[in-house]
Length: 452
Figure (cartoon, rainbow, N blue to C red):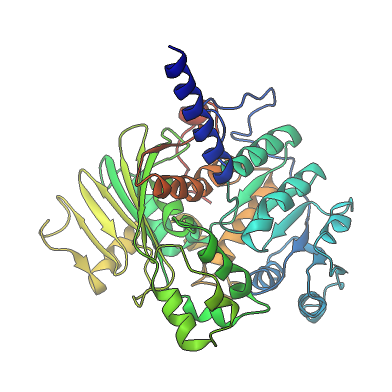
């Protein structure tokens, strides 16, 4: 008995140690909270939305330019490590006939001074992934609604911290998954809500995008920090572009939730080959091995038994794809290329309707939000228009005192795929359980309404 008890204690300690390294909780029990749930939360209407930006590099500067085109928005402050980037976005405000926002920098914590202001309502965070969680929590603790670029969080501990902080402070924390606002994705959401595809059974999402060229941004720029992740992590490290829309089709966190995940990665090859071909032998990209598999495939099962395949690949020579496939009992929609088959409506269920034949589907099911906003003369695009539609909807909800399309629970659930996939890969594809970030409230609200 003593030996068995010793082995049991040693095994438990080993699991706890592995979980701590991965940012996993030490227990499968969900943390309890006395704070009120953020399900359906809406703040009081804002006459104008006063914005502060943290990070105005490649992504954040685009948000600044598009926010300047949306009625009812005032840009009050900009925080960035690089003064020239801060000045560039500040001058964009001046060029648009707006007051020049105050710059905060260049220190890594300079944004905290901006959060002390009482004339800022929301903060848009577009910084390296590893900074998202602490900045979002700091923003909420200072009374600001936090809008965070993808992925919102990197560990389950960060997910829970954001959930607890949002509930405690009654501040929004939304991950800005722009792919939920593409024309195709919004139309498919509308089709799913109207029951066109029947009962939904399976979905597929991906982020397949050859980004090896970012490795040339060595000292500054996206590649200077993103490349480091491929040297430290192995899993599905950027899942939400493909996953977010599919999760909304299925009503995840709105009648269903993620239950478990298995994940496997291929060998890591192409980044090392690229580094060897483009950089000298003593370059830092050649000194540290790349351990993140070139392609990761993760399978999620929901509580209702539905399945979602999520793939990630940011380096192999392959055309861009987010897959965007949803299968129901009556038919399916697939992206890249767009195609559809609906039993009883398509001429033949063994042949897809594609190309020009899709016009009749868009004519029938184009989402009301897209039709209302995408053709707005102010819409200057951004990933085919989806960026503007996303920001417009955020502002619309804030100014009208409405709940947001996504909340902190969505940010946590979608982001948690990364740490769970890393844990599963380490365990040779072992199934990993998703935490219930909503503490049981996931089946108590209806699916996202396809309306403005």
